[in-house]
Length: 486
Image (cartoon, rainbow, N blue to C red):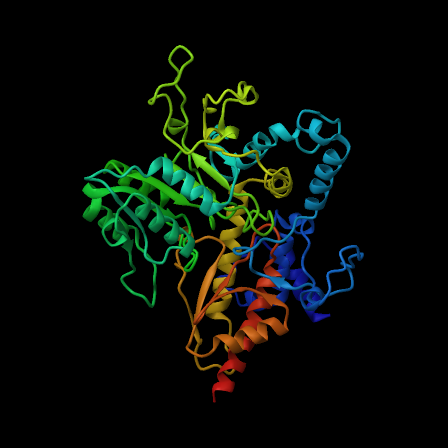
């Protein structure tokens, strides 16, 4: 009875602030935060993996799901792979139905109950849904390819090294695929990586955050010889959210082209790629944007780089920005004339190569439709709150048997400098034991050996109560790991 009364008192009070409030350590408090969450209705739009299914040895794809009796897992890994939206199956079924009953004529046939337009126009529908998520004009976005492929395509257009300007500035701990792509582009131009690649390294490897002023100093040091700056909008390892607007403007003032890898930012933070004057960007859609493993990716090309200027109907070498061309990037009015005369569409669509996989775009659209029911402003607002709550519990929850906290947070403490992720560095030797305990309790997070776990509460489907549960399990896992060490 006392517990019920305490919950009622919390719920009847003003909007809650977890700081300096001992009630924040209670499950009831977390549940109250969920009740006050304007995005809480979106959780039911996703399939939350059950604890039983995590251990299942068979797929049984036609087995009826039982959402009411089985314990849900605590899935805090949306920064690696987002959960499946329930409407993904519907979108894919509609695609399969159109293909089945129309065959090739499905490219041009409309249906009264269609979720997406005919196959030939499905890429345009993807761009329309994607644009508000990344803060772009519809014409500046294309849903296409995969992340690393798109980075190569964009660098083929935007990395134009000269004798004087040939360097590319990236993070020293960029995601490996980005590093490989940059290095191979450098070699493709018959340059040496040790001469043409500038790696921005942290001052302190125990806290590997790259301060904005440090980045600007590196830009200054290499400005006269740099052709391209390519950074992650959110650094995958630390979760740091870079000051895109300031860094972009500063580098461009030095004559440097600026691109961003938004893999961990799209669907996570409220990007404004157009307003920030970014030259180009690329991202995958399977993390916070929930399109499935290896799902179709996206690109942004600022409208000034997508212009197509024809002189009396004929292009010259200066009619449009150089690029690797393919027929799907060609002018729609002449695409099927097959005349080997390439004139690109204006905007990011003109950077497309092959016709897109309608199957893949259906999965992307299924998730984007959910994002378009709300806004990135609202999503970011919850992200700040739920990540802040996670941080608060990790740093202040009573230790109960631990002399100190056997971990540190290497993600910036300033909420404006991070997304929906905290990276926790454990003391040496604890990782495997901690992971074992988390797995026993059906907690799904991401590890980066030798000692870091990344915890990412996705605003559309994770709850404050899950964050509270995670902290209980994680701290207990730390206790067990320390006891095992003796």
